[in-house]
Length: 187
Image 1 (cartoon, one colour):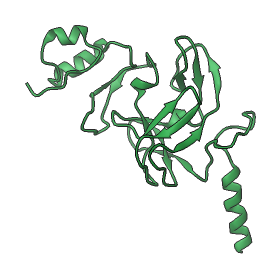
Image 2 (cartoon, one colour; image 1 turned 90 degrees about the vertical axis):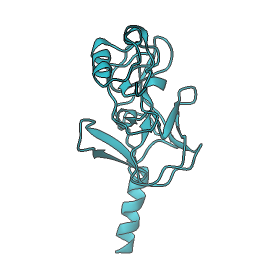
Image 3 (cartoon, one colour; image 1 turned 30 degrees about the horizontal axis):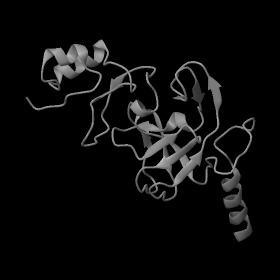
Image 4 (cartoon, rainbow, N blue to C red; image 1 turned 180 degrees about the vertical axis):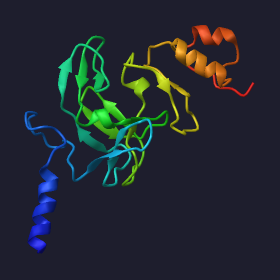
């Protein structure tokens, strides 16, 4: 019986989240270290770790397909080149106080803080793309939450301005027209 359990554990170690046509590389995410779960809310599916990741640790080596446009599955590499990873990066949820950072130069994901098993793995979408496929309201719960998610170089769209205005998150109407960063205030 122990032999069966050992074999099952060994099999989990080598089963990559990446499909068979992606060449295997040491450090690729495996089902032994990660699980894709339903969040039970508007976020859909997310990724959780099964092990502890220490601050600054390389959490995973990335692989994917290079494309010339942004999608829900891409991370921006250059002004015109994107890295599509619908098997791992696609499930990294957004947070304004993320647990992970993507190092595009080395195609690695690194822990920004200690991460414990069963915690959602998060990145800040504003740090991974100049523009994102669609902007959306943020409910990440972080103390520094921007309340509206944009790409790093995007201005807040009309829907975002309306949402933030209704929520009273801008000081002046001028901010609504010109801002790409949020002025969150209580006035």
